[in-house]
Length: 300
Image 1: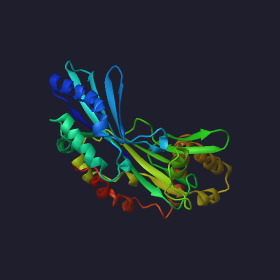
Image 2: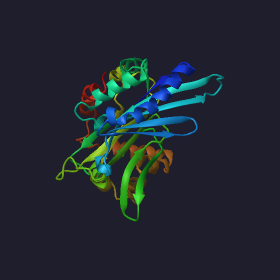
Image 3: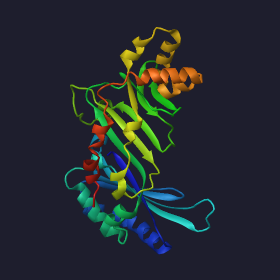
Image 4: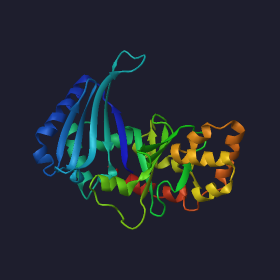
């Protein structure tokens, strides 16, 4: 689990003011609360955010944000009363020994009666990033796609560099991201997991789940919705110029975007061909066996 956002409604102006004041108290007391880290506050018209760094150095590679807290108030469509809320965002992949336990104790002390165990049981998950890694296949050496999705994109830089692959729109309830994790770590000055094997990150990004964190264990496996075709097999499957053009488009824009440009009968045919070329190494059921361990990292 890379990131999870949990939202709770704040009932009443007095509690809202209390939380507001505690943001600044935490920042003022950061040397006592977080001697090796840093607390930053960012504010705009409708919300403010507290960034909680367990470690903070002048070099970005030495900074680790393990949580942020957003406090906001706005008017919902059709509602007269002001909607006040707090969103706690956690970055479990950044946790090191004891850091999350320390954060929970600080959170409960500063924001009582909004306690983390209560938030875990009753808050609503509005954002979730789950990740799976391939240490055997380089990014762009295969064709990822998702059925019934027409939007995809691949980040480009210059004439030859292909970066992150996106499947789905950035506002949809489920979107996939695939990228070279080793390169990302190198670019930020952080040590890589391996210097020998590829390190491809496959992320499922979910929005508006509307369930409490405690109930995530019952969620359906989103990785089952992503399919992966063998690129080499697909390229050699047919010499037809239209198919080869489709292959080229798929590598530049992603399979869903390439399919969306085809007529319905051709789209169905090509999708069926890709379905017959699934790679043996992608196993969503095996990936999903790690969910209980991932959820255990954010338990009260």
